[in-house]
Image (cartoon, rainbow, N blue to C red):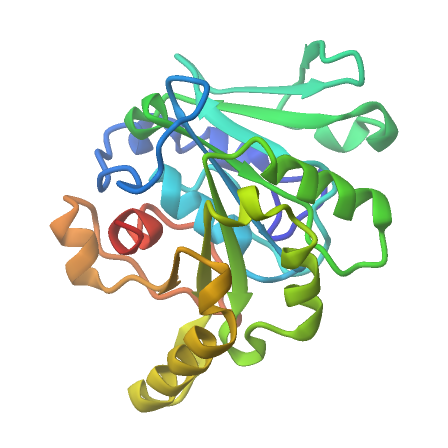
Length: 260
């Protein structure tokens, strides 16, 4: 999925790394997320376009399953869940799934797809599934509706807000459009914090967010991970998330470490 990428998610690239990625154990699942209906914790990642959602999804599952991009917006909600072998399917309006070839995703008519399903043989996905959603704020009412609707069935909802334009009025309006029941499951993740010049500026940003948005979320966290967090989780250190150099990455422990 693009980072907000289109249906041409470059999942074929992710397909080639599943074998190696499955060996990553990763940090523990969000300790505060508790499944309400199914055995696996269901996490929905939501936010405006180009807000770092797909990179955070990769961090949560522990491997670069989806390919971030800042060029084209996500069209369909994409569910990443455990499968014995890599798989990709499209779910239609009748809720039936049709297997797709990794290199033929662009051939699928968007109107015929309700959501995409990506299966990956990752150990962490035995405990959770993660949903990447279309970015809000592109004047596409249908995409906005589908993204917000996906939150209704989540055990945990993570709203991504970019550090340099954190928590705009449009984000607040969209978040408050959700029911109080859904918002009670919410975390605010600040992405691209490496674009802020100094730790003191980051501290001031977090203070502002706690003052302006703290009452709306269970917790506000930085969606950046240092090498120490990754190593503590038994994972390889990785480069910091950056809007200037967005590449797939292995687990960075983001929410798994910070949202406990």
